[in-house]
Image (cartoon, rainbow, N blue to C red; front, side):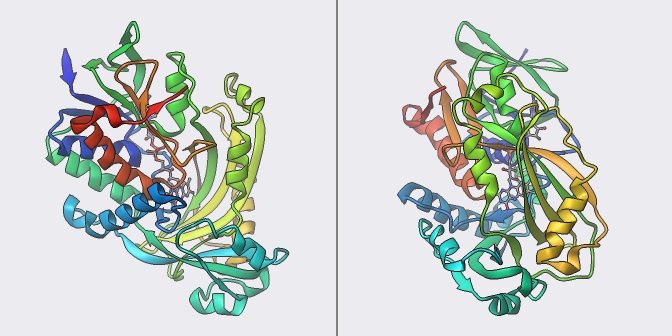
Length: 385
Ligand SMILES: Cc1cc2nc3c(=O)[nH]c(=O)nc-3n(C[C@H](O)[C@H](O)[C@H](O)COP(=O)(O)OP(=O)(O)OC[C@H]3O[C@@H](n4cnc5c(N)ncnc54)[C@H](O)[C@@H]3O)c2cc1C
């Protein structure tokens, strides 16, 4: 019988950073991950750190803490996360009024600079000035998502954490108290379990009758090998239609579709974007689809063509880069930036998922989570279901 202080389910960035912070507090932590190949959202992410995106005192404070954390993280973890400051270039389509689009960014505590198409190409020479009516420029952070995940895991192991590649198949409980988890290999016991299973958090909790407001999109993107072209910034659309479809997917009526998963597409969007990592490889994105069955395989036949066409309008030189299409699930919460806290129905059960800007919010919230656990458990937020 193996006992731990905490069991963390899922080793994407949320599970890895939380395991590290809990272990740093002297707790005996087991981290469980089902997929040694990491076909998850963290691996296929751009790795942008939107530290400008705070909108109220709390989120602004988290953004500032996040920026501080990343500046010394490689040193703290003893492994290069490739963190750097990088311009974010948010492209505005030709048919949109740039000033109106900029107004939507007034809620953020760092305001973007509005650039004309010509000014935008001076910052990012690969942009096609004829495809945009302007660009919003923001100071952004960037890191290598999988290397940052590895860095947290290595530091967690050095502190004495236990990390097993096993799939959690069942949450164990007695009455309404969590007692541990069952995996495809064995049972582990703990009075505290935290779900960091990304897009699968919803179905894992559903399996014990808990309905939380965390859902997922199916995302498709292209990863390329190292190439000689140089992109100087992270490029994304200024109007993120994905946020609209995520919000709609939590509305009454549509919500019931999550209880009867199907591979019918409720909604999909293509948002042309690109980032180049320090090794010269690119991630080109992305198609986001709401399909309530997590096991559904979205149609990949046209996806690569659609992504290449979308990206090539904005960044023509990237159209024919060699590359391979990938698919993953991305967790989101329709009405807040994240769902972090205790799940009231089951004593000892917790959630750390549903982040909108995971790379900015997860590290400072993991630190807070570890402080709540060790010093002030009553203060940890309770999540209603
Ligand atoms: C193309 C693209 C670009 C993006 N760009 C950005 C960006 O610039 N900035 C940003 O902040 N975010 C970005 N994101 C989103 C971000 O990558 C994700 O929100 C984040 O990586 C999610 O981390 P996670 O740990 O919640 O989930 P995941 O990384 O998906 O990890 C969850 C893990 O749980 C494991 N798991 C699930 N069920 C079980 C089980 N039963 N037992 C054991 N293990 C289990 C899974 O195998 C998986 O490894 C992007 C996403 C995509 C796809």
